[in-house]
Amino acid sequence: MTDTQTSPDTTAEKDAPPVVELPWADVHVEHHKMLRLAPLQTDRNTGGRPLRFVEFGYAERNSKEHSLMRMTISLPGQRVRKEQNHLDVWVDHETKRVHFGPASGLQIEPMNRGIGRYLAAQGISWAKKRWPGYTVDGSDLNNKDALNEDTRLRRDHFLRVHGFDVVYADAQHLKGSVKEVQVSDLLTDWNTEKLQQVEILEAAQMLQQAEQNLAEQEVKLKKHEEKVTKYKREDAGLRFTISCLVAFAVFQAGLLIWIATHR
Image (cartoon, rainbow, N blue to C red):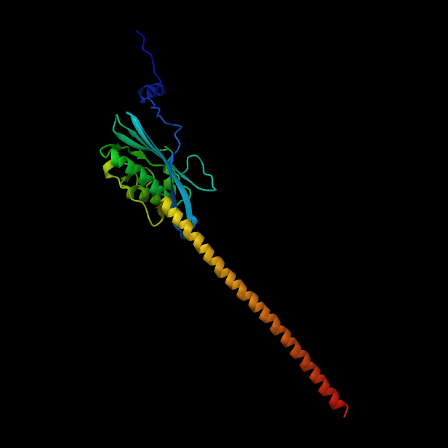
């Protein structure tokens, strides 16, 4: 019998678990909601934060083996990269495990407006109502996020407020990871001061109120224009009167000078 040598790479390929091809790769969002991003003070890192409305879209799929909640945020009049404003929640019913995607992490535009926490809260709430006993996979955190202290702190705060446990293997806080956790232990809160859901009736009332305010402003503007026109007419009349008085005063002064010099 001959001894066949196996390279380390070949061994790793044999020992590695098979890649599981997930279904529903072409699923697009089917349900939509309007979100209001509240006007906030300008942030020194992320810039201006004016009042803005965005669209939250989602779709759900279920089978015996898997379930999926796919969510996106659309920005009217603005395009974003494919990996931005996208969050998937995958459920494996055979192993009773949950994981979040995409693998590149949650990337939000615009930042610091409460969108990321809202997406995470919706996905957690969906899984928590159906499979509270399942386990959320742990994962390593991107070292790139740890290069900037503010970015790292913002990321860790985001994870911890949703119930994830962030741990570090080094004192420099570069090698971070999230420990696995029960779905029931996760939290579904988001910052309602930054972001609010707007229902259709509320949106209609807002439009109606905006139209009413616009009509009132037009009436006020018309009144102001009428006052300005009136003042302009009065001003023209006063200018004419003053010009006549000046001319008369000059004439009188000239007349007095002529009388005084011809006596």
